[in-house]
Amino acid sequence: MTSVKSDQLLSLEAVREAAARTAPYVGRTPVVAMTPTGLRLKAENLHPVGAFKLRGAFNAILSLSEAERRPGVVAHSSGNHAQAVAYAAHKLGIKAVVVMPEGASPAKLEATRHWGAEIHLVDAAGLDRAPTCAALAREHGYAIIEPYNSLAIMAGTGTIALEILEQCPGTRVITVPVSGGGLIGGIAAAAAQSDSGIRIIGVEPELAADARDSFRAGRIVRVDPQLAMRTIADGLRVPQLGALPFAQIQAFVHDMVTVSEDAIAEAMRRVAREARLVAEPSGAVAAAGALAAGFDPRTTVAVLSGGNMSLDRYAAVLGA
Image (cartoon, rainbow, N blue to C red):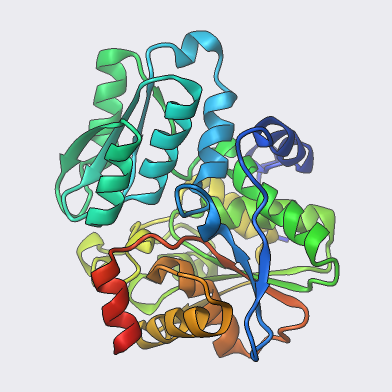
């Protein structure tokens, strides 16, 4: 374990508190085995918004005081976090404002609007997302719900690990897609502090391999956002890890691997055929990594993080 500041690390108690806090709003997702492969998938695509982001969004908003929540919340996202914040705010009766890139998936834009969020579009690469979000928060008093660089967000995502350990007690490996690091940060912290024998493996596209490079360098490495735009996995195009997720990665993650675009597409097809589940490209990355590495399917769980994409694009991938 690499030495990091203790105040940067997520505690197991914080994850357990998040599980209790969000329980009235976030349902437990099943673990589904692929047949005949045997690889088990944590089906986070089955949340009402189609992705794991609901966990962190609810925990972060519910952690705010009533006074902090009253003006509303603001977030920036390429899609899944946007939907989650919009949905959570709708259920809690507060205003949601979301900053999204012009190149965001039409399906994710439509779903975010469906839950009543006010949407502000910025450049397609998303370079202005965070500054625009901060400016809106200053102008209107909104509370910012960070997409990944937040202990509250990671406490919410860490509840996935608690469920996996209860549902599959013999788990030895968990593979997790990596974008800004909020998902793997929470899962790694919760799993490692629950069972030190579990290996957490991060998976990302070869075309957006900043987390792998950061893991190897021992420091946060940024990739060119325009280069990261090349991957089909639109939810994993964040050009660099957040500082807080990177602290969890340094402390609790065992390895980072990458997968090709062809491997991602093939994993989407295999998940559909063998598990009867819909995986968007970002959601299929962990399964692609587990299948490529040849981990024992009896003791491995891959996190299927989301299933949000247009039907036309999905059909094109399945039919390729």
